[in-house]
Length: 367
Figure 1 (cartoon, rainbow, N blue to C red):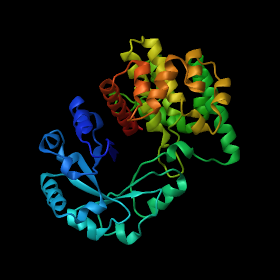
Figure 2 (figure 1 turned 120 degrees about the vertical axis):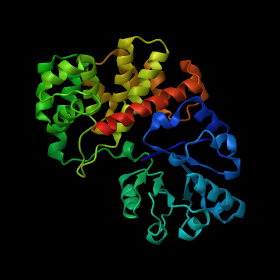
Figure 3 (figure 1 turned 180 degrees about the vertical axis):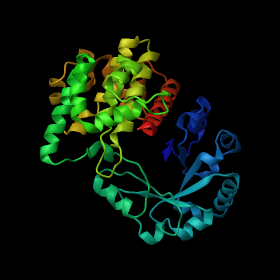
């Protein structure tokens, strides 16, 4: 797996600042970092000194592979341990050989390459701008194994009609219990009715992340060891952990985890107390429930007894939590006006986002 770090084209200053502001590789471990480059000549020795070769992949436009000076630079990078990902509709084995690229990068929203362009290269190949399951299936058929795009936000898991209604009612019942701080006995009822959620909860508390030596086999044990506050958080996230037909975790889970952790971190940075941080975490997790459940957010909120601040954030992105949620949803390039409205500077936002990614990576590995 890898993460793409987008910076303004023809400018490596922001990239150098990003790597200088935090230990990016440590926070994103074990993911590799893909860095798109419009101009390889803009990468100087000062920037290279901040990068870890074995975990850095440069993504280059295929049109540059015919340039002799760039070929030389790419071979130097290869000798130093960097990898090259060739991007563009003209990319293929011949162009890749000029810069010793081992994989291709494909824009799923454009005309896709043929199998003859990808198969001769070892990969892993990357496809980006994937907007729906049809595009995901098409690039998967080409042998692509790294995927990027908004498809997870547009393709919640489809179930048959009978299962969908039952599952939705159980999810909303569990959310309602969580929102009104129900006791452990009440929480056990919908959990016992949903084997997938039960399995993932017990798997999580028995994982190496918690370090318990004796196996935990009941919800009572889990509640005792985790504590009420942590259990509530895990259950909120485990709503997204339902296994798909192919055995994989729902693609919304990592995004929900990032949003939740980022909301909590930003709330803490603004001086929010423990209860306020819990509400920020909840707003981040619940912000994707309309996608997960295939319902409008108004319908979902109407069934729950949420804090007014969480309601306002989810329905209209208003109030303090709403402003933070809008900022978190803006991703890696938040508008200056959004940053100013929340009193968060760019470096603080970047550091908190990296920490949120780190937490989400750890969570995903334990599920």
